[in-house]
Length: 297
Image 1 (cartoon, rainbow, N blue to C red):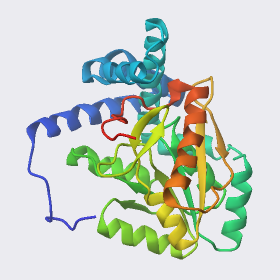
Image 2: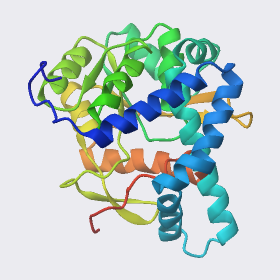
Image 3: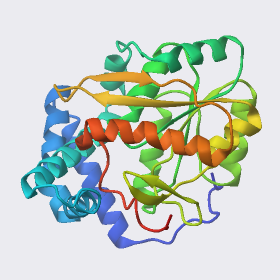
Image 4: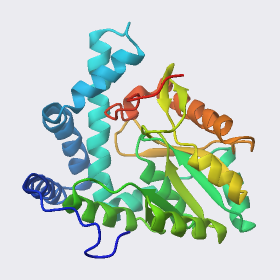
């Protein structure tokens, strides 16, 4: 992360005002009982913030791109589920104490969980890779509660005022967090070399990255997770925190480790793992991202 005073973005009144509004919303929501606040911010994102910010329109456009024969009713229903999940995720990540207490009760499942335990016992590095599905922080919190040291990698937000407390929420879940960039890369590589575990999200458009098929369309996909796994001889394990029907609980599943081969083949397999989850429950994936922004197969 940059030192104070270095590469500091200039003051922007609009960013400052947006941050004040969001901080006020978050602060007010945190006064409510946990189940009420999660449902309330989900509703607010679904009915107010999402439509005004254009997120609902973007979700509908992406759904039409992937499933052009989908009915308008189904498209609207999924878009509403997406926004509700996004709102719930936002306030959950600011509800550190209550969220972590609930996550501590989750028992992770899947072949990848046993592989993770074995790697930890042998002090071998593990890269846990997922997409913006459900709330991945539920998985990180559940694993931290089981004694794992789970690091995270994040992309700094353009709004530096909001970014400052956004980073603090990630740090509060335990385990080191690293910003994208040279300094952050050095930190998480060192963490992995020491036998640590790291969470990476791979499902956002990356200019210059190769286009891999995702839900039948080309999507520029970073190969860095697989490249790092091969370089450090780390297990590459897809994982998912799946929101339950009550809107509050999660199940956490770790898939079997991806077999080492070449970076593109490995990331294609990771992509298929995410596709499987999205097809099973499309309302839990963040269709609000510009996933298919560029690239051709």
